[in-house]
Amino acid sequence: MHGPPAPPDAGKLPENAAGLVDLAAAGSVRATARLLSRLETGGSGAAQISAAITGRTRAAAVWGLTGPPGVGKSTLTAALISDSRAAGRRVAVLAVDPSSPFSGGALLGDRVRMSEHVTDPGVFIRSMASRGHLGGLSPATPAAVDLMAAIGFDVVMVETVGVGQNEIDVLRLADTVVVVTAPGAGDGIQAAKAGILEIADVLVVNKADREGAAGTVRELKAMIALGRSGRQSVDRWRIPVLCTTATQGTGIPELVQQIRLHAEFGAATGLDRHRRRARSEIAIETLVLERLHRLLRSDAGRTRLAAAAAELADSAGDANVGAAALWRWLAAQPSGPTPSGEVSGRAPHLGQEFGQ
Ligand SMILES: Nc1nc2c(ncn2[C@@H]2O[C@H](COP(=O)(O)OP(=O)(O)OP(=O)(O)O)[C@@H](O)[C@H]2O)c(=O)[nH]1
Ligand SMILES: [Mg+2]
Image (cartoon, helix red, strand yellow):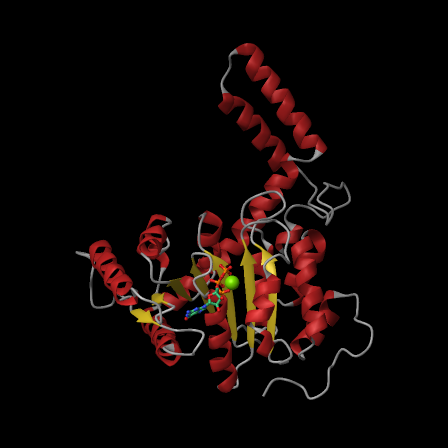
């Protein structure tokens, strides 16, 4: 299908973003990895990549997978990869690690789980940090999903451990969200508490070979009925609850079928357009917030903040006045972030990196 017979990246990788993007689109794993590293570094290197993929067709289906630790998300992901590969689709998996602003930690276990796929040129697996270095969802995550789509992957799967707001933001990047639990009284309730149920499109009770799976299914169905009563309508997606045993491949065709039905529902109702816009919204929002953080934490920003704080503390004044002064300063800043995170006077004007 898409995969070239010989590696297109045998030699030295090009330095420029456009060259790397061309190689990645031709199937180079090395070029794709290099691009992702640059997205994670952020700054102008990341901005150049976004500029280089402008106008490229994105036809990928983006699937989000989340659930409590250890319920079998990676094993399910591996099973879903197998299914997509059998259908000739290229698959990218981004395992987003919420625990650290540095990537790589979660990869080892996932490599084992997905070992049958690591040598397949039609599959790209990478772990990423979900948090930016300055807090909040990293702008690299939405940028990475977009990059994978732009270089021709047919499916982009985002796996995350669903606990906090960052993970919910990550899932807002997806067209279809699969929430995974396993038998055990706490899991379903835990998921509901974390607000995860509200963003689920498909619910999976994995480890159905274990005792208590039927009970967990009942519990989840009851929760859905409670949460949705009165708001049910014909054009509303009915969240299915499925049982799988990922280690044996049981229930995988049914899961694939539900994901496909959800895609069809999205196309028929306009939900798919809505989700794509939500994805774009996060891409823009994370860039704005990252820039704001960088500016506030630059030397000049800290000096301004300290001055405003001193005035407030000494005069029993109004914090809003200080905030307004900082906003005025931020709005007047001509400089953007450099990859090192420092604010440089030579960096492009605020509007330029946003493509204006
Ligand atoms: N019995 C049983 N074990 C399973 C099943 N699916 C996964 N496991 C096992 O559960 C363990 C955790 O699986 P993972 O796929 O790593 O789970 P995960 O949700 O990705 O874990 P984290 O990424 O650490 O949150 C592994 O030992 C799997 O072999 C299943 O259907 N039945
Ligand atoms: Mg995992």
